[in-house]
Image (tube, rainbow, N blue to C red):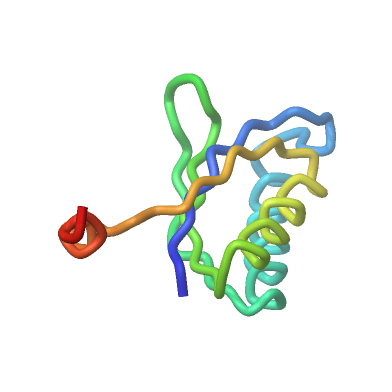
Length: 95
């Protein structure tokens, strides 16, 4: 499984208050699990973006599906694959 992060911004009026957002996170966790992934962690962010979501998915296709699933809730995502620093040595050793 790969690890991915999504920078998330609230862009729609679907999320009216914190209670609505709590419901969305519960639904979102179920969606990720339905796609075979796992929500690792989520954080509220003070700064340019509203939230950071870290999740695991079987591959890029599933990560893309997860991002689309997040956006169904009126949230905008920018999703990136994460590579553990310990794995970088193996990736560049033959260069």
